Image (cartoon, rainbow, N blue to C red; front, side, top):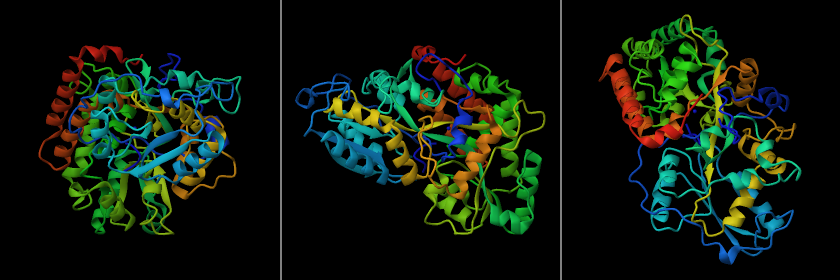
Length: 485
């Protein structure tokens, strides 16, 4: 899974558009992955927050060492080893040792919850974590338990590249929203991501299909594909986060930003009583009802579905822009992977070119980290041009740093297509935040989508279950601290 599944800039700006796109395109860098919400969290972490035990790891502060990193200390780093691997982090760690004299203990894993939940419970967490993937520990759960450091100090520190400019002022506007919890930035979503549909340029050329801009055109290709023994749409059945990319994109594009905000703001008519939500869920269900799904897709994991799509067994698949990296080993050389904004329903408020875009891949610093000075400095250096370029070279993806990637970075076809789609979208971008703010609600909606795709419930029941999840979340007093204007 992507290092996921889809933007407050730390100054109180609740922009919904995620600007800075033109600067992003000028450097022609890759668009990358997002954080995928966890399927479920085994149990809330029991250990509370508190200051890390950094007394033995505190050095002298200076202009070049604002957090007082102690030479000779050790940093415990855990990286989600998904679509982006962990070679980029190893390169960072080697440079950190060279520049700061800190040795890193590196763990690359996909078992984030399995490996880290016991450590959080015991009050012995790592120093910095890439908390992503199917087994991500929900950020909101960690935050409610007081287990995450407020990253304001990192944002307000002088940037590595220009000490006269704060770190927060070097970032693409809007990219910090996804890491906000109750007005505090507790996770740094590092990678710039787009979400939508994907297809093979080679297959489409062979079949004479044109990339669809309307939902009717999308269904027509699915129908033709089925007639030729090919699935229309593949989805990662065991991880319904992915099919919600289609559902939620259709809602936002049909109803506009107001429809998106209604969901994030827990509106009593976010789903039941929403024409946009009703049309969107009925449109997706039509794919199921007419048999346009790739056979067996409901029972497959993300990589299983994606691999069959790579084998030309389906015309389309939903995903974020980590897909290309995740499928490098199974994608044929001439596959010609392409990104496609979600086709629009009739009379949609947003144009076809509009895309869901923002930041993904949350990096966190536990409040009980043993080496807080080094963890904060490591994160500050992540937001330098040098480390941003290292990431782009190793992971074929763009970071949230403005003008932070060397122009010589080469892009793969799928990633290049996301850059082109982003250029076409301009300011027509949107981003849901409920997946980061309310993991329990997100999981309930995913579960409803799983039932819908398996034809065990109808669209009306999906709307009822989704609204019930919203209404339940709205009863939590803490929810009032999360608000989109």
